Length: 132
Image (cartoon, rainbow, N blue to C red; front, side, top):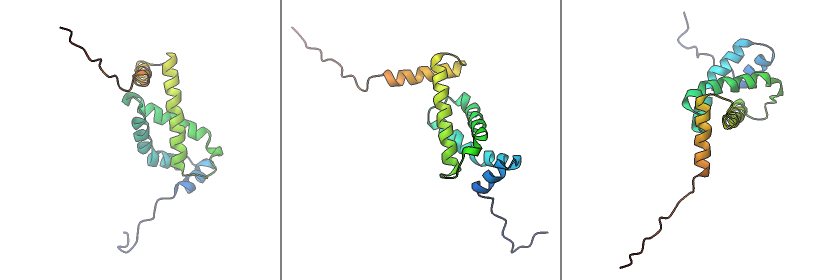
């Protein structure tokens, strides 16, 4: 039975989890994923990722982060580093979509980006003059 005056332990900071993860602790990696997956998904969706592909992009971002964890030096917040990787994953996604080597939702994403980028800002309608 817990003592009523005991304060629950604070969750470990990201830095401690990263050190444990670098040491091979898979539970620490799972904790980092649980802590940062939703904010990463919101970031990707807000940056224009198709809703159908957000989960795959989150997964790809964590795979890349896991592969390069030895290069994380702690000079920025872990979330900042992760969002940077996520942004690069989204750019790669768009490039693959533009080259046509991907699924239907990626192609729609690329077409949507091209359309938005090629649309003129404002087009003034020509005035018609009445000639009687």
